[in-house]
Length: 305
Ligand SMILES: O=C(O)CNC(=O)[C@H](CS)NC(=O)CCC(=O)C(=O)O
Image (tube, rainbow, N blue to C red; front, side):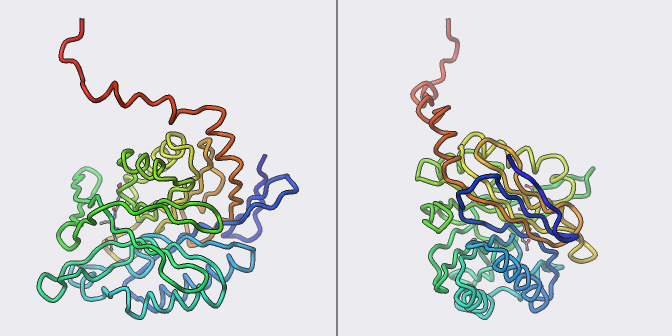
């Protein structure tokens, strides 16, 4: 049983009516612009607020560093993992003694000097300020929806990542890393689940049109299929004259219930208790992973009689 209390205009907290204290995660949404300094101070404030409210891990969305207004600007603002942006977040994590999921960092590629290409990287920083994991987005968003006004070609500036990375052990549980458009590929979420994930993360900058149609359904489906918590930090609102995002940073429990939603209007943060018992019980009561019959999918009969 969850009660939702509106504590401030733009934030909600969900607490369970039980005595045991499970660790708290904070799922954020922001409206990044091309101004990196301004974006950092908004994120820093949300992380600080999450800390004050007891969170031990905070999730920031794709493009938390910036959302560029052109391909050139997006490329020129990019950095390496050793650059200022990640250093500032590492310091913040160490100072506040919490873990950070930094979704969708614009990371200069390995051959940047020659090809001027970046990765879209999800970086995990621990409470000592060390990078523990980097996952580079596998599926790039090259999509034209003329009737919806959506036209983005991520592959024009981004290199797809080579592989998934092992789920990371954190104080809230084992976190499996995805990014945004990866959410549409259930094989990825199942692979992470098989490698031990208890929580899946999809930091995102969904378009308004695709978000309204698909966002919550996809996130809940991934949670139900994998019986994981799903945390999806999000971009919201207008970034510049050419781009806006759907928002609704969401937390879903392993049963598929939405347990936190930052809404579709403005930056904010939602706190969620991560009770691992819910993963254990959901999987024990309905062992879908044990019921899966992969062998029946290897060979599809052309004309079964
Ligand atoms: O461009 C940047 O700076 C950061 N990256 C993004 O915003 C990415 C690539 S353009 N956006 C998405 O994947 C949206 C997916 C989406 O909206 C859907 O699957 O419906």
